Structures are given as C-alpha cells and as structure tokens.
Amino acid sequence: MIREKLTVAVSGLNNTDNPGPGVPVIRALRESEIFAPRILGVAYENLEPGVYMTGVADKVYLFPYPSQGMDPVLARLQAINQVDPIDVLIPNFDSELLPLIKSENQLTALGIHTFLPTIAQYDERLKSNLPGFGLKYDVLVPQSQPLSSALEIPKLCREIPGPWMVKGKFYDAILSHTVEEAVAAFYKISSKWGLPVVIQEFIQGTEVNVVALGDGFGNTIGAVPMRKMFVTDKGKAWSGITISDQYLLDLTKRIISETSWRGGMELEMIRTSNKKYYLVEVNPRIPAWVYLAVGAGQNIPEALVQLALGRHPEPFTSFQSGKMFIRYSYDLIVDAETHQAFAMKGEL
Image 1 (cartoon, one colour):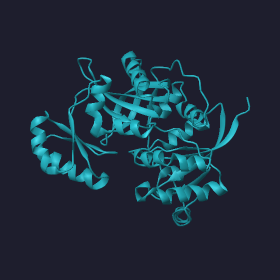
Image 2 (tube, rainbow, N blue to C red):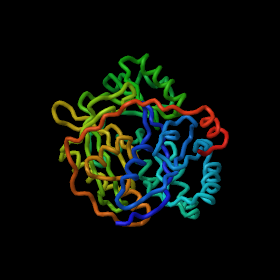
Image 3 (cartoon, rainbow, N blue to C red):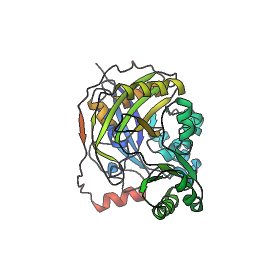
Image 4 (spheres, rainbow, N blue to C red):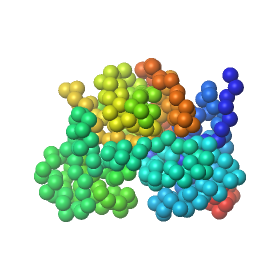
C-alpha cells in the first residue's frame, strides 16, 4: 500500500514531567499505515525537548504565544505556509485551542485543515461549567465553584467538604487540606493561568481516564480507557494500563453522541471504592498518553488527520486491554550553538 504524503504541523513538544501530547501524536503519525507525513513542530519555548529529539519533527518553528493575540500567530503561520505548505494542524495545548477555533476561517483560507471542537462544545466543558455539564449529561461530578477572589475561599470551604482540589482554568491542580493551603494555591495558580480558579471537592478513589475521538455528528471513532498506575506530584500519569471497563466506554459514547463532539477529547474520572464514577475534567484535545491507545490498536491521531481532511474513517471496534505505558527520563545532548540558532532564527 502506497502511503499518502502530506505535511502535518503539531504543537505540544514539551516532553517533560508535565508532558504535552505533541511527541506521542507525532510517534502515532509516523506509524500510520495511511499517511507518510512530513512533520512540522510548533514550539512556543526554545527549550521544549521535542524540538531537539531525533526522529520527531522534520523541521521545527518557534511561534509567539497565542495569549499575545492571534494576529502574530496567524502571521507566523502564513509566512511558514508560503514556504512550507501545511495540510493539517494539530494543536495540543488547551491555551491555544480557543484562539485557533475562532480562527478556523483564516486557517481554511490558508489551506490549513483542523478538526477542533466548536466554541459551544469548548465552553460547555470548562472546569468552571462542570456542575452544569454533569446535570445536563447525567454524570456525577464533584462539588466545585469558580472563584475570582481569594476572599471567597473561607466561605466556600465551609460549604464544600474538604480536602479540596484547587485548579487552574487551563492547567495545574493542587490538593489543599486547609483554608490557608487553598488560599496559597489560589494565588500560585492564578498568577500563572489567570482567573477564574476552580475549587473542587476532592474525590478519593482510582483515577481512570478515556481518550476518545468524535466525528462531529455524534459518532465515536475511537475510545480507549486506562487506569493510572503511577502519578507524579503534578498529577500526571507516569504509567498506566488499558482496562476493559464497559461503563467508561458507554459513558464516553453517550457524551460524544449527545454533544456531537468534534475532535479529540479526554475524560478524567475517579472510580470510588463503591464503584461510583465521578467526572472531574473534560479535556478538549488529545491527551499526552495517547500513544498507549496506539499500542492497544487504535491510532487516534491518524483518524484525526483523516477527519481534518474531510474523510470518514471507520470507527475502531476493539482495543487490547492489559497494555501498559511507562514514561522515562532521557538526557538529550545538544550543542549550545544549535539551541542559540533556534532561539535567534526561530526554526531548526
């Protein structure tokens, strides 16, 4: 079978102890049986490890942060696209998704295809909107409340049973056992990610997640559940195992069906000792552990590229349970001149 050539731009190359999905997404695309992709890496920092990893991106470009406004980002995309035409863009950071969703028409005009949630879908699953999401789609969620001031914390901590998870609107979650700890976490997270900050009831149990892909018409193209086996101090899975859990699969398919979800997603769940499932987050993109799904038989990034190109991939019907992933640290040796050249020229 002759694999189709195309160019895919992928962000999220920060392969650290708080890894982005970029490197595993690229690994999945390299193993595609349909595409022979040329990979352009999108980096927002000149020290993102994926920039320098051998065999990951064919070329990497440094981009301005979307938080600085979309005009510089679109100008950068347009300049790159003129010399290095991009067929598909896969953004992997929460903070870049909404600006890119809003820029879909401009991207289409450049010939760049994406497959992202709608603005309504993105907004509905925000951490600050999770209680309403749970009511609407009949799923248990922890008590939670978005806050814009630390002065509200003592009252809220009397209303919500402790301990509490203090969460940023994009990233970070800090477990707090006292009001003082919650206030400190509020200031730490808000200084980094802005407001609101969400105070959420801590649910004791086993962390189970699902990576999934919706086609925008209510159909689930792929879904693989896993149980976290080892978690870092940042709450990130350092190892996990695919599990056969029909409830998780049924819930995922129901949510995708009722929301007509468009694109990749991750459901973060807690399974309690009495077999109750609480939804604690809905991430509107492919998670960093997606390569486990590939190893279990579902190449979700490959299917995402097909959807972005307007095609209709066949849904995956099975996966292998009992497949594990284990992350590890690896020292990259890079010449200082290479790093300096990337920082100055903005490409490597």
